[in-house]
Image (cartoon, rainbow, N blue to C red; front, side):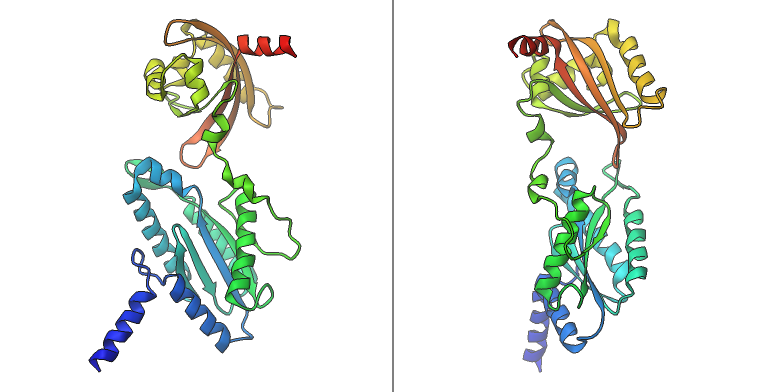
Length: 317
């Protein structure tokens, strides 16, 4: 009897995710396969939850914070879906729910409510951080009759949700237009590295704190590295502009963004001077785009072009 008890304990451990206490991939596959074999005619939903931009949380707040996000997410998914769901951690920040005996229309409402709930920021490390999920869904037996088929179709729907803007749910449809997955291989660092101009992101309110700086912008200000650049400008957009141009430039940006009704895409353009680390003064063109970021609120994405470089390229054309 003791040996049998030990074997059962080992089996349980082998199918349990050590971090969240949910089933692991092996345990999930086993449970789902067994359910399908025993209930071949019951309509079910295979749901993949994939965290949006989880790497940014790890890089910004540390891996311990990232682990806490995974644990709290697992608890919320379990709370919302455990009544009818076989739930397991697929790996990293991915979870699967096999939702049994499903009403598809009710499930759509439930998943939309879950996404809305996740959009509410949590306090992590003293800053409000919203961790959202993109969700892909396939339906048994319509989209597949075994684990592998359902996983493949739900994964296709998941990447469609990612491509369409993240923090949303997509159900698999036959002949659905699939995104080119290489789209997800690129990030801001790759985008900004080596540009003829500089790229940066800053908060649209308060001290206008600089959130992201590309290497090209650092070089434009004749700085050696990002830290030197941030110190030079006081880590603020206000510090990037020549003091004599600051009031005019910010007024022009404000007028274009908030007093121009036809500017529905929230774009702006302004020209001003900058003072480099070594005292050199340059004239630049500023192309800004005002957007809402889930973690920081309203922010500006800005491309800065050195006017001398711009003129030089035009004369060469």
